[in-house]
Image 1 (tube, rainbow, N blue to C red):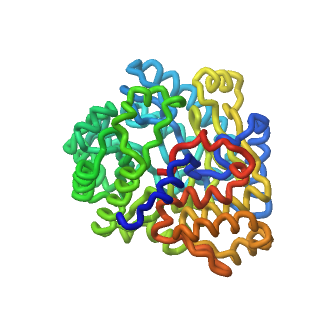
Image 2: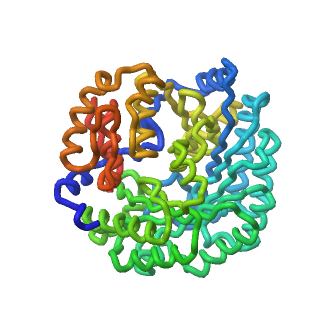
Image 3: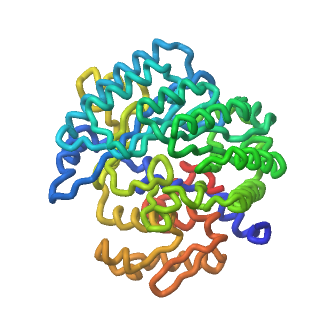
Length: 459
């Protein structure tokens, strides 16, 4: 692994770039796209006899204490009254959205994210799920996942979630090193974590995933190796290992992190290399970028069969879904459009008080956006792209359409990050480290401005 690290690659990875959970990225959404445009596109969903199932994303923004690394839209509070009020408005939004999908309410995927969804007490969890089920029809064999903070959950929590239909759990860990935990204000024991994992398995959850972060203050090879060893011993079905994005100008809590304690780019790259090495030695498949899964996991099978997809929750097996966004700041996707709810509670509540969907901004994709999104998706998910497949799906001559991009890719080929063949683009094993950098070549918005500063470091 060390042989694949050189100064040139490190310099490329020093710059910033999108994570490409969507293309165009959310910072390109426009305020001109609002509730009216959204309603038009929901009405067009089934025109032409094409029916796409639904995916629901529900954002629960509350946490009882701040994790200093966190870049999510969150509200740190111990005031239960704020939760009660938020749920009251969230249920209004669910009803408004439900009306738009009354004739086609089939849901195959549901995800509760945050914040900390398990900040809700058991009765609030039941209330929210009852509201969802009253307006949408959840498929019996669907994928219903929830993010878990083991410090706010126990065996009883997992039993309640299972009773309500949840069958996948994403468990936040980040790092088990006590020094790192104290530096980011998230002290969490292995015993707390294992208790939740055992509870999920005891209740028949189909999948348990663990989330880690590399690049946190005081992380080093020895300490992170210990965390990886502990995680592997817990035997999760999936492991996500995200790169920490230090953006203190945008996220106030990150200002409490000592920048001098952050690992440099070379160390971060070696931490990622260590993770790939340890996880693959343990039998996990490196799905790409930040995800690992067992060989028999649905994610691995989807990649093997060419069905893997990337969305706002990361890698997914559900490529053809329309995603309905529920809650403050949530992002959705209907047909060739994206939309995002208001990020501030006041604006979110004001819209719902007027009986209006709380959509702040969005975008309707052009033909150029669609072909570039397809290219980026394929590279992110499969690290190999067939020019013929793009040409057939989008009616373009690939080499002519992407002539400037192909010329730029030649430099990455010389660097050993990919191989350009007559009808294929293949990312090398080494190039997987720089997959975001490769995808940025096809991002037309980045080619026309200098706004890289908006994004996190590539590594």
